[in-house]
Picture (cartoon, one colour):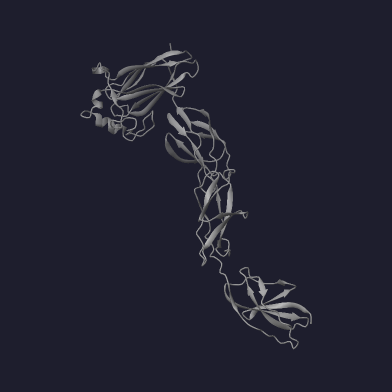
Amino acid sequence: MRITGYMITYDDANYMIEFEGFTLLGTLTSGKRLLTRSAIDAYMNADSSLYSTYASNRLVPYQLLTPAIDCTLSITSTETYDIPSAPTTPGIPTFSLTTISGYRVNFTGSTDESGIKRYEVSKDGGATAISTGLSLFYDNLDTAGIESSWLVRSIDNTDVVSAWSGSASWQTLTEPPVLAFESKTGSSITFSRTHVSPGVASYWTTLAGQESGFWLQGGSTIEIVSLSVGDYTIRMQTKNLYGLLSPFSNTLYVTLTAQAVPCNSSFSYPSGEQSYPTITSVDLGSGTGISTLTYDAKGIPDRFIAKWNGNVVIDTGYRGDSNYDYVGGNRQIFIDALLGKLDPITNNTYPDIGTYPDDGYPRVISNPLGGFDVGKGTASFNKITSTSNIINLYVYAPLSGTAWEISSLSCPA
């Protein structure tokens, strides 16, 4: 009698047919299973033989009986076997340590009787990366702002594979914008910035050393208006679709001033003018040579700083009554007035022990002539070019009741 195929039975149910050596098997659940195999002749008569299984669930015969002519089914013996349990499914990935070109993929681990050998982490359904721990740093060395989808599965020590985790998506940081100064008025600053990153939502701007608290939307040219006279520090960050901020851009330093006064002009502030700072622009003209500042801080200490061509060219330090330099005198009043303010040269907050090791605050220098001359003095710099004719004069007057006077900032000669 010709054998046409085999019928496979486990746990007296779930029949599957094998023809010409190919077995049609479903996925078996884990646990003990009773498996038999019956030869089927051309008349659909069947006889049985015992089969066992490997971990791969492929079947191999113990023996094959001659098909029964009387169409009866004979089972020669039975045996139970184990189908291995798969590891539990790892947790959905989470992300940390994001950079411009990569980030760390984290996940909770699987459990399994035989232990976990490794994890396979897949990006965008592609090739898997191997990790023996519960995280993997991915650095794509590619364009900033790239978004990827991630899955993870585990493999136990008998090479049984878990199901894939749920997927999660993440994005690298975006590139910082690049800023370029365009123009300014007495109350506005205009600058441009590159728009290089995908998923841009908005930009953060810092002015005068403090967060401005507003977002700037779109456009390659930005104008900030309704500003007061003073120094402004502008930098920006890009924000991607996941709310991640890029590194800061380059920094723009812009000073807004009122209309410049001519050199050799005098200007002063009466008693009660407290400022930190007052800024006056002076037009030195196109001449070159020595320009001299003549000042009087009076008795209450004030500091005079001149910036030309982007550089500090004059710094008088605090000038005034020496009583503000002594602990037994008015030193504490001077300290209280400066506490928490920024030093205009170091940009450090007072107290600044690194710069002023005695008590963290500048000394007060007094003219040795004393009397009404304690705050008087001169300071000079050399204007070496016929361009860059504007010099900005900053007066730092932190104490209430102060008064100061600039007799002149002479034209270069």
